[in-house]
Image (cartoon, rainbow, N blue to C red):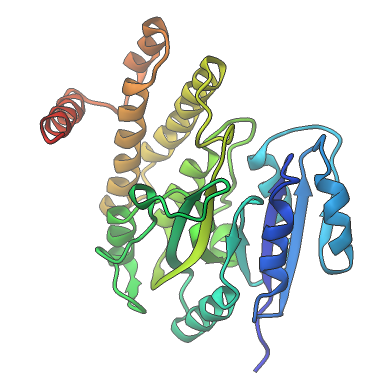
Length: 308
């Protein structure tokens, strides 16, 4: 039986210290029918130079202008030829048997989405960050196939926005015209929410296939005033885009619940953002947040404080 092609899409930007570990983990995959699409986002360090040593085995696209991860992932989707899509971050790495087991499970179950676990570690330290583990085994069962509304419910209950934690069938992306918002941070919050909402067949492998690096000055760890403001504006843009989806009549009750769950999650994060209070006045115009929602978020925050 012919093994289906997997397209791996990787945006890169100034990751000279990590990109070889990332690429080597892909070169060493036991599953060989892959195309690796690397889209450099105008790196100013040695990232591209290092990537060129893999040129015979990857599609390397160099760009002169920095446009962000969302733009580069969308460009990768446009040229991807695989039946399955996998998004990877260029400073992380994955276990060598990961793709083989993911594809086997996808083919066996005819799933549109195969989810799995990841572990996080600090830059320069292989010690695990237990509080930020990506383990979904408390909600999802190993090798279980979830279909239709049950798939939506389980995706809502075990939501994680990172596209590095699932293998997805490209037909789902194409059928629903899914794309990442461009020019903002946290673009995966939008993409993954709509992907999970539109998935009819989902399965899960209780394996720690992915290794996520937490490093200084990354999107996840940077705490400058400028970054906080950009993060706030980006989350607000993502919220407004999801709000438009939520107001459409095409979604079932369960799909709307999943989208609403993410709206509330983002709204709560915006409330807690360390930005000028004047900036937060924009939150009053968010039509999808009702008084009941505001009271729910407030109660949840109070409960969290009491449990500390």
